[in-house]
Length: 278
DNA sequence: GACCAGGGCGGCC
DNA sequence: GGCCGCCATGGT
Image 1 (cartoon, protein in one colour):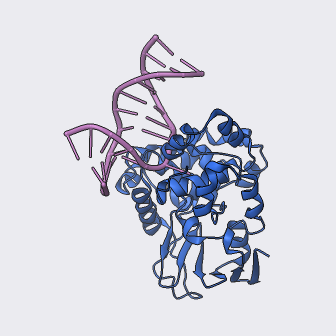
Image 2 (cartoon, protein in one colour; image 1 turned 90 degrees about the vertical axis):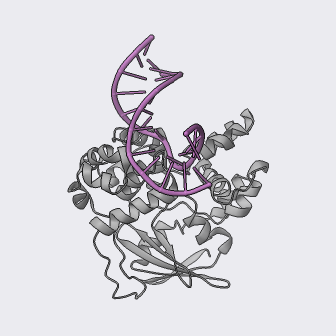
Image 3 (tube, chains in turn blue, cyan, brown; image 1 turned 180 degrees about the vertical axis):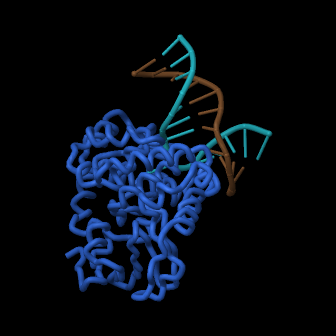
């Protein structure tokens, strides 16, 4: 058993070879978290979770156990996925990043986050996102968790719709300010459930209509909000990694239904750990 | 003071 | 369709 819901507010993870919270948080798919004495505090939309690694179990205390069971993709066995990705050039990446999972980020949060991420660096736009939530998001009530001190939800679409170009500029969004205002208007006409029913190619086409969303950001939304495991967002790090692969290796990767998972392992190893893939 | 960061847009051909 | 310059901003 990978994990079990203990009650409405608690999950226990047993298979630690496929759940590494440090790797998950540093794999570039979630940007609102903080380290605490015992573990990590993580925010997703208007949800929160405290993740505490212990000797042979990880304990998650949260506002909604059912939500986070799906958020962390705990019904999926990543050991099976990793077996299908057992290529020599991926060995190192899987060794250090094999505990990464594909999260189901909140649609609006993922879209806004990755529009701001464009031609930006993680440290900087993470600070921008924190400021956005602090200034415009709803204060999370911490009555059932005293660790929740001054924690904010991601702003709702309605809250976001009140922001002006100048507001986004003040947050440090730079020239992306006007994309954000326009994309937020467009998001009001979109429905996550309806979009979820679309095949990946059709869904990508819909996402590409959003202002500030090009091929790479669309692929991030496909992987991190819609969990399309086969999608590979190609940023500067992944581009360099792909250039080192032979044509045959590239073909095999693109044809894998879990190419996006492989991409996450590589991104973490390259960008965060600076681990050579070969 | 260049160059880079989980790139996209608009103009040009 | 592809190519290219530009776009804020902080870090190295």
